[in-house]
Image (tube, rainbow, N blue to C red; front, top):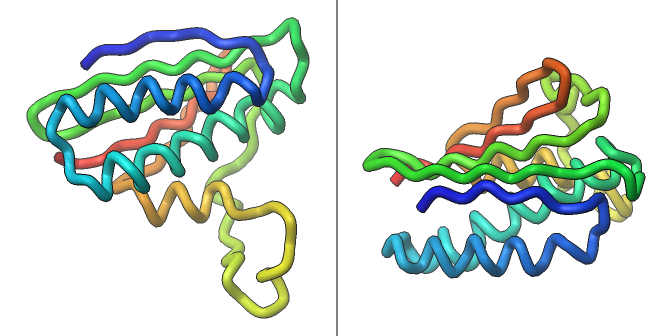
Length: 134
């Protein structure tokens, strides 16, 4: 699977893209858990962060999703047009008593729990890379 799509900064675009990726993942014979939990949740969170936080839901900006697969890994690059943030500074645990009822702040935590590696690259655009080992 190689996928390279660009979507407008509209949260309504998340579900169709995640469904498309999930279908491709099933064809790769990944585990049921990876196809129905790990990938959809982590990818939804990354796309949501890119649209809402990165691009500030600016309809003039876009989010790009590139997915590549090899014998050893499935890699997703989510690229937004925002300034980015310091992912290394995100260390909150939303499962603690003081955070459990917060309405946000779970995205990076979930990505880290569901993927084998979560990385950030900064340049002219912000890139979050999700890697799931096969």
